Image (spheres, rainbow, N blue to C red):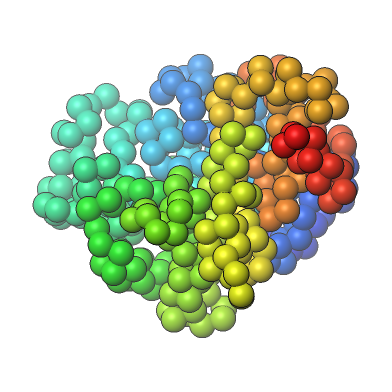
Length: 366
């Protein structure tokens, strides 16, 4: 078990020692984090993918990325294990220290174990049903669960998978989207219990921060059933733990196709409605973004747009997203060496200035 967590001094040291352009690191909540992160969602549940993913993570860290994102259900727990192994190897090789790297994971979806060859439901019954960790009605039709006994079990598994005594950021994974049967009032009541649980785990030193990794709720129209107000969630965290609460980060999709986080004025602001990115900026909430390339579907579209200046379409996509006001880091999933090398090129150049970003927006919307 590796001890420690990302710290102010060590993340700042990582940035200063990095070969990346120094403007590619951002300060938030007393941490210095790269404005590109590594995601670990896709891939087969096999040894070849394990090796490729591990090597990609190690290469990314050595190339200047100190934000690594995973989830317990990614590749059925195997991605968490690979993240832990990659960081453990770099620590053993004296190339990094644990406290230079910010690692986030997610709990909420019910998953099996990719390293155990067993029927999905048999595994769930043996591991969660028979011990009483989940009972009838706890798991939604989306295979999502937000009860405290389940989340405590999953946190313990994530710790073991990663091999860390402390996880920097624990997300609740698609809870609104995963609990469509639940009324808003019931959801908020249950969310408060979860926040109370996570605050106890912060005091125990098992997690540093908690947040919500989402798909639609923060981007949805505010009159829809699936909408969630960021201010309401922040107020809930303050009710639980005051101003020192640990709810400091969210994750949502954002790219050149999924532009709602930037465009949609759906969140309550001081006087008018604002976008989720504007609301996050106003409230000092760090926003990590997912699907920067729409799993590769945007590359051809970008390639044919003369408005983008870089030779690499993936670099153009990452440059656009990380330069958007309110975005902390897009999370890019890559395993092939050539893709890692290509994507790391974005760290050699600074993000767009505000004027450059606005100019690009104007050109793209003509």
